[in-house]
Image 1 (cartoon, rainbow, N blue to C red):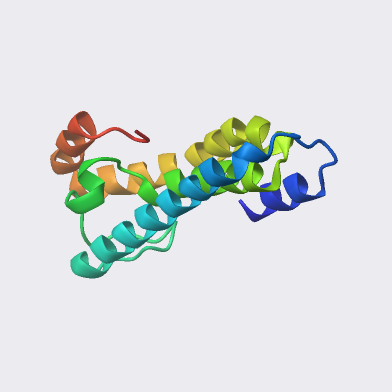
Image 2 (image 1 turned 180 degrees about the vertical axis):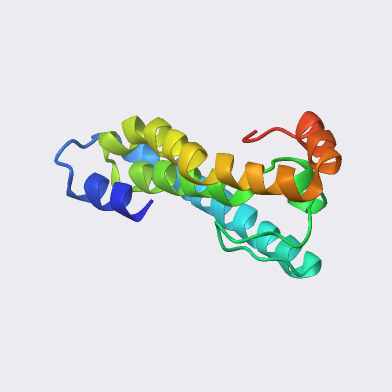
Length: 133
């Protein structure tokens, strides 16, 4: 995310329409709400929020009942939101590559650990809750 934000910030391609600030700000607020809701659930479950570490609990409550990956979804919303606030076109083009990178580098390995640790419980959860939205 940080790398994408730096590339977007340095990009010379801008959007001249000033009406993008408030939609961007709304996306940033949504990203903050998703992250805080997820962190609250991690704390309640007393499990790690750190990627690539073994989980001690399968979280299916709160925001995790709506999306399996609220923090990664928040990362994508941060890129989109700041791109709109900054008026930078490149960020609108980079959100999909960022989402794919997050999915391949973090989400799929995490799902593998959850599947190995929680088995059928994870399979039932994955069948009823979307990966992104």
